[in-house]
Amino acid sequence: MVDGEGRWQRLLAGLLDWLLPPACALCEAPGALLCPPCLAELPALGPACRRCALPLPADPGGLCGPCLRRSPPFEALVAPFAYGPPLDRLLQALKYGGRLELARPLGERLAVSWLAAGPPPELLLPVPLHPRRLRQRGFNQALELARAAARRAGLPLAPHLLRRIRDTLPQAALDARARRANVRGAFVLAAGLEGVRRVALVDDVVTTGHTVAELARLLRRAGVEEVRVWAAARALPPRVPAGPAPC
Image (cartoon, rainbow, N blue to C red; front, side, top):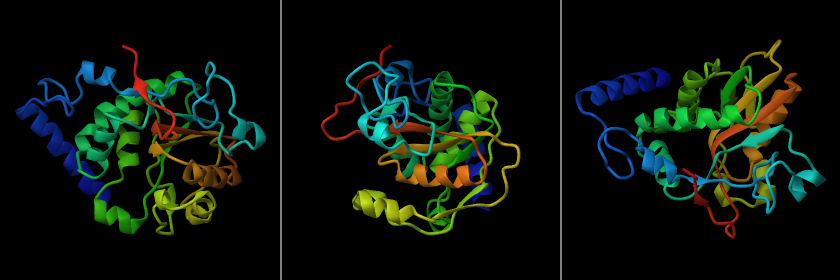
């Protein structure tokens, strides 16, 4: 039912685009939901660990200290942008403002960056919301981004394969140990993954990585050989500034 509501919202957004040409969500210039100059201003992540996407002082391709000591259960975390202005405005408008139309240009732009970072997965899996949260919001922002990315990349999408069975606390309010405990056992697979070797988890923002790590462990136990995480943005430690993307 909720997914059907999201489909009608996307159809309505397409009709409105046809009747009233869109304006840029950031600068209000007419012609596109995200104009090329504003796209160029989105904060590039920069050199980062190839496993967890936390910043590195040297060229990309290496591993950070924590990943050298203990590798996460996913092969790589690919996030083209750092979570900072003006991207945070776009993601908050999508997530909390119901601006579903923003998922299409963002997801299509993200798909290009994600695919450039490695071999394509066999299946895209959006990070699920708990049913109560889904009813409140009316949509899952990770699923909306994944839809647009799947269309752009020509990849299959499994929107209901992963389920969140516990309504966990917001991770931002917890310390590292509590965050791990908060998501432990919070997810289940609704069906099998026979024959699927490579998948990508899709999320809007990765902060500590505990949620995607828990999902990756679940998928590996189900027989998946390679789990990648595709995120729109990586939240950075406070001391690391987010720079503008190169044109």
